[in-house]
Length: 137
Image 1 (cartoon, rainbow, N blue to C red):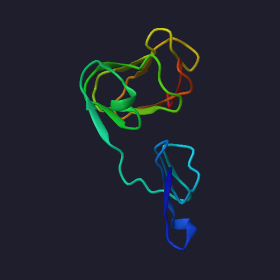
Image 2 (spheres, rainbow, N blue to C red; image 1 turned 60 degrees about the vertical axis):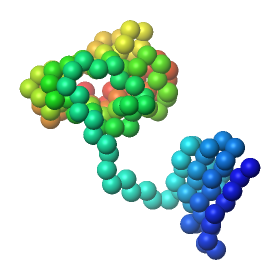
Image 3 (cartoon, rainbow, N blue to C red; image 1 turned 180 degrees about the vertical axis):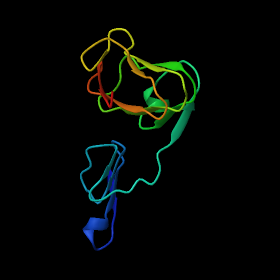
């Protein structure tokens, strides 16, 4: 069943569709888990400090700013959900290696991506369950 809580102005409607867990703000037919119709201001992004080799996961790392404080290798998850993304930046004097994790590809290749300078960053976005795009390399 669905439940709608709204004011007399439908542009301020909040809809919770309980049978599929979707929430719409200003939208009565959300297609995503949380869908906002109109402007959205996200004031902060969670920053996760990483100081050693790490296997990235959608639950712990996707949608976050990953601050690498020492040289390390980050292994992308082997079967991501399309649309997952990580923003990775180097806050050290070492090299950050982003591993394609075996059969996965980054920009069409199984080669790793590196960030070799402090304050440099790359955004990695899953476009399928085995392919990633690296923006900013």
